[in-house]
Image (cartoon, rainbow, N blue to C red; front, side):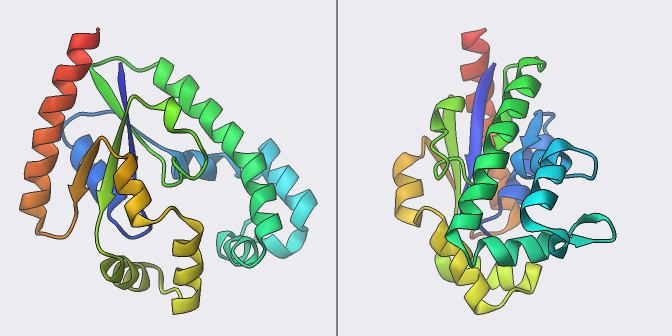
Length: 199
């Protein structure tokens, strides 16, 4: 099976693009969803986070993701600790789940695929791109974060130029949904052909 890694900066529209591929019957694995599952109460990662950060990152017995985000984007050492814990678990789970899939190709959504040095786990890299001012506006509307929080997140990710340089394919997410859907159709046909040829 062809494994297509879908990545892009925060607010570029990765989820929107993933939904369009899913609507065409493509299996989608999302690293953020898997990470959320791994930190549910009772899971080993949850217990490790609770031991490390204490009850300050809990709310109602579950992880307070907003509180944890504030901590890790203010302290590079804490961010590194959390990444060292979660990234191996997430990639192991992605590998396990892709091995169980059938079909010509699947999409694996990984926001930090390049930043974590894991480009090798996918066969092709699809980058969803938009200008940084559009990113900032979308994130502010969607998440209600402050300008400072948004800047910290953007600064922690690869630059737009670095992502585009690494891409095999690019979706410019700046037009209307019909244009976006047309581009997904085009790539879907390409990936089906490439995946079918490899079977």
